[in-house]
Length: 86
Image (cartoon, rainbow, N blue to C red):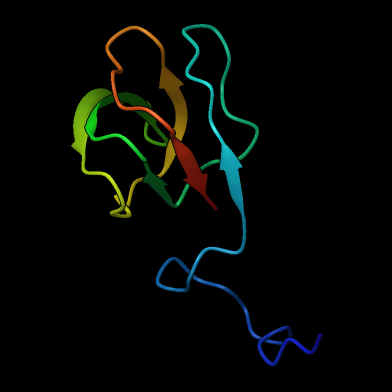
């Protein structure tokens, strides 16, 4: 399959190139820093950002929430079906 954009640099305003299922953890960082989160079940997600701040945000089901996260915490997260877009 041809990728017409393979010679273009991807930026933060570009669509994500990959998706990972995320299992929230209070001890383990994500394998990839996200560009956004998507959930199948709305709720709050506790994250640590690339700047090192830890906050709780509400993410609606089916909507991409733009955030550069390094960790999704188990404690304080009740959204389900979390996917990281990178």
